[in-house]
Length: 245
Length: 133
Image (cartoon, rainbow over all chains, first blue to last red; front, side):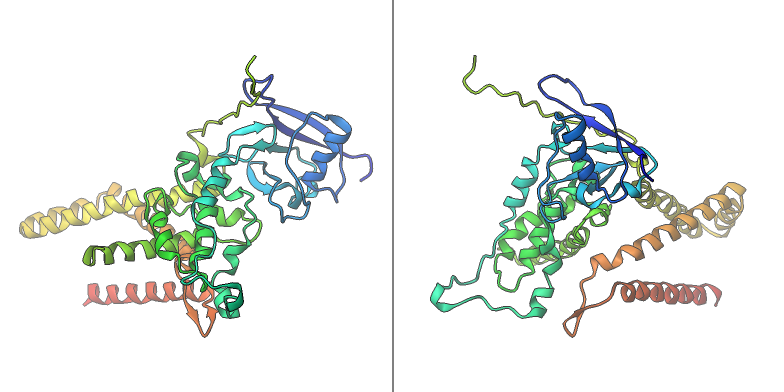
């Protein structure tokens, strides 16, 4: 396996000189231990210092290195050359987001959406520090735990054709995060958040493609969160018909 | 020169019209959604049959004969195949829309899927009994 190489096509875009993205091919030494992120670091250090990409932790917890690998949204640190070798690999910035530069995308819309769902515990009654913590049993935690594992990498938005067609859609990660708080026994903010769920761009913007849950690197199931909210939202609507506020 | 000039120029990619052909997952999803077209046509044919039944025996016989046309048979075989595809893919997704907890544990996905198949089998048997007798 020594001296073998692998070709990587990278979609590049340099706003100060390009009007549109273009593909640049890099040939680097192949190593079966190498992750896609390490390959990019090799290129930046040894081949082309102008290449831009985001990264931080290298261990699938910071959520920075999301990219399209052969058209599939993945974390660069969690994908390995050996799963593609000897074929050429194509790397592109995350789909459905505007390209800032090379593999870096503009995530402002995503962050705004995460903030919009009131991602914090709204207790029924504020307690002072002296009154102690808000107690929760392991069983109560199990109800929301998987939805709390999100690392905000944005892969689910890159996987969502509904978000691609209409960026007004609140989207998978934000709605899963909303579920994380609504399902928390210490939280009493469900009624406030249901307005976001019930909206046209809330859960009803989803057509249950289900790819969001498939690509999530942390095992979160946004598709489930959204379908369960559709049930809640329908109930909300029916109750509202008989009991207007 | 402007005091805060920026070189930023975010590039918005266009979604290609054939986006759903680029990945098998999307294609399967589109077929699943597309099954509704065949089911709609099937329902219309069935409703048409009910109307003909209300118009007397001759009209009803005419409808039955029309159904024996090769195109009608081909369509019904195709519609059955698509309906089964929709059923299977829907049953696979059903656990996502169910949140059932028993004794502090979430009911396993395969139990929910199995329950759907059992319900499907029972409904089919019931329908066959009603049609046969």
